[in-house]
Image (cartoon, rainbow, N blue to C red; front, side, top):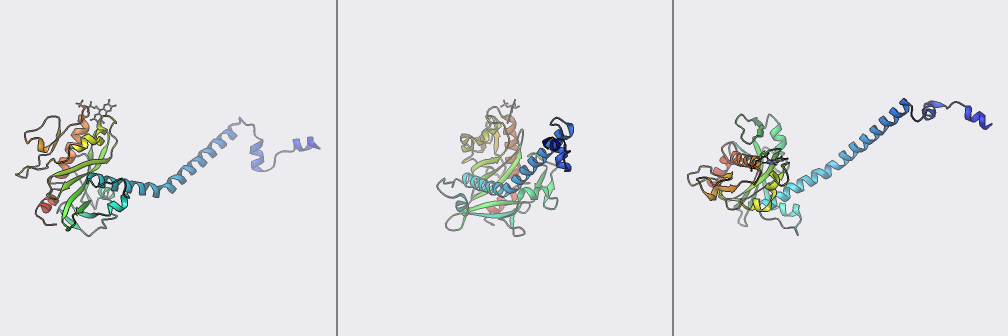
Amino acid sequence: MSNDTANTPPKGPIGRFLALPADSVGKTLTVAITLCLVASMVVSAAAVALRPLQEKNALKDKQLNILQVAGVYDPAQDVAEAFAAFEPQVLELATGAFTDAFDATTFDDRAAADNPETSVALTDDPAGIGRQTKFVTVYLLRDDAGAIDKVILPIHGYGLWSTLYGFIALEENGNDIFGLQFYEHAETPGLGAEVDNPRWKALWNGKRLADDTGALQISVTKAVPAAGADYHVDALAGATLTTVGVHNLVNFWMGEAGYAPFLANLKAGAL
Ligand SMILES: Cc1cc2nc3c(=O)[nH]c(=O)nc-3n(C[C@H](O)[C@H](O)[C@H](O)COP(=O)(O)O)c2cc1C
């Protein structure tokens, strides 16, 4: 009876598959492909499920950076709550005026830079960004009387290995720098990534963009240029290429192709 059962050929495709020798090519390939499919489905499901959490964390990190660069970050306070003090505005770079054409709370500068309708391809591109958005979300911090106290402007440009994304905080006069910091880059730790070193970031506080004639003088170089130390931030040691990138991107964004029209409006009290 038991012999009969042992000699009965396996029934159905699964039975026949299970009856194959463990080292058969068909069984090995089927097991490997099934494992790959199951693993890729698990990874895809995790990626989809975690996306909202990632987006929430990215938003929180951006808000945290804005609080920090404006010097109002308090670890005891909830980031979103503290961020409510800022007034986001979508700025049209060419005119330097705010626009209501987009919702400032949801406008995506990076997506706008990729969209041919809301961006331009740069021919003169010292910041190494390829395309520049025509519209940017800026953040205003007002004093108790409602006057602009600080403006927080997004900046980005290429370093040595990566595009550095960050913010520059300017005083209400549109010329004095309160702070600068990057929230995303892939420069080398200990070299280009020293842009994140609090001691280097602190060098930006109190520096000026343009001289009294209105000429843009801000520099990030090894030696102090003729304009003087008021307009100079020391280069990063051993990271000349990242330094050049930061110098170029700051000059690009603070110049005519960047925020100059907005800063002129700010200085004129036209906002
Ligand atoms: C593995 C490796 C990573 C580097 N990363 C950076 C970097 O992130 N930023 C940078 O400016 N230079 C970096 N460098 C150094 C540059 O190649 C170059 O030597 C340096 O920018 C010159 O700066 P210095 O004139 O101040 O020495 C790196 C070099 C190596 C070998």
